[in-house]
Length: 373
Image (tube, rainbow, N blue to C red; front, side, top):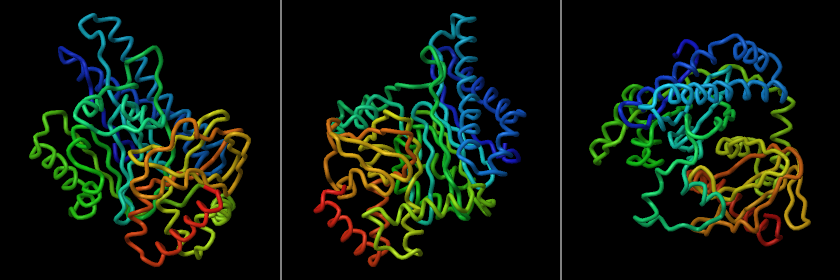
């Protein structure tokens, strides 16, 4: 529903066409709630104020739409035994001002392409992804690869909905892809970036992704929705909050030598994440090793505490390094707002700009030598 800024992909599962029923219920339920007065009012409040409270309320309402879809699927399956066990993945985006509010469950994905750099936004809810996030070093052998489609979360599966929701700021020229695993299994992240930037239109880009999946032997549902941001709206975030994030990022050992212009380019590869008190910081997420830059709050590991400007898992930015063991995971002491930097995106940024690369790798070496990462 482009007029309302609603985009959803669902990949159903279950015999006797029950997967189609589950995905239809999910789409209809999510659209109804996201078009409802509560989400509309909270969207206006976020655009008007840009406060953390307004952001949390909007995220909760969007997530409630996905979880309501879960409940509706469970109810339908209980009423009709032939649909027992049906479920569906979900990846959805609600555009609010200059932000994409993303919610997902399962292994359907959202990607953001900014400039020439593609970034996987969502974390697969699969057994393999969960083990990797827990610090298990897994070589993707054929035996392991067959577990990539074993879901740990989906709508209609389990006692309650567990959709994850977050917000991604958009800028002019951004491209977004929502797709089923029938696309992501056959088209890698780098090629996603190439297709989305080289094709003449979002429609043609989506068609090309489906064609590539089928040409490479794809036999699963291959669905793609592509969005192009022609003009992002005015950011609802207060300028003081934006300035605060940049100021704190400049205190990070990784970014402290960057000029304001180069910092802005570096921040374009970061993804904001909010952590609850007690939550562990994974070292692998979104298909890559990751480092964390703390903006607000504190994290702790074995008595060490780091606050705003702290850099966590700096070694994740070095290519071909093994994941960090779970025993070395840092934990949020308070509510934390942080920036996540994927190792793959860091490498691509450095490959694109030799001068920035020299500064960043020098700062990274200093941070590791000083034990600040």
